[in-house]
Image (cartoon, rainbow, N blue to C red; front, top):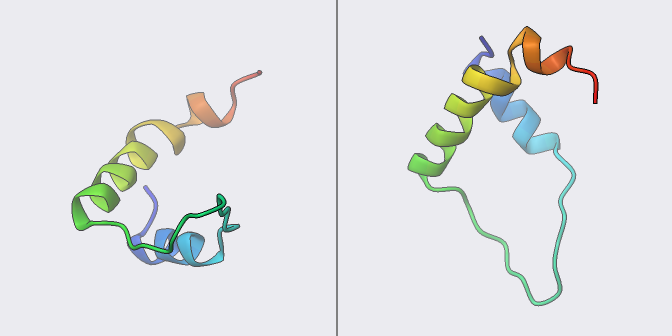
Length: 53
């Protein structure tokens, strides 16, 4: 499981991609909760991290 503080740190240091004409925005709490659940249920698993593309 990834600690909330570690996930927040990853968000803060992530590369920012900007499309022409886009504006900055914040994630809604529901969006953040959904992303955190997906990290824990899929992306943080050994199966996902050790897969061979």
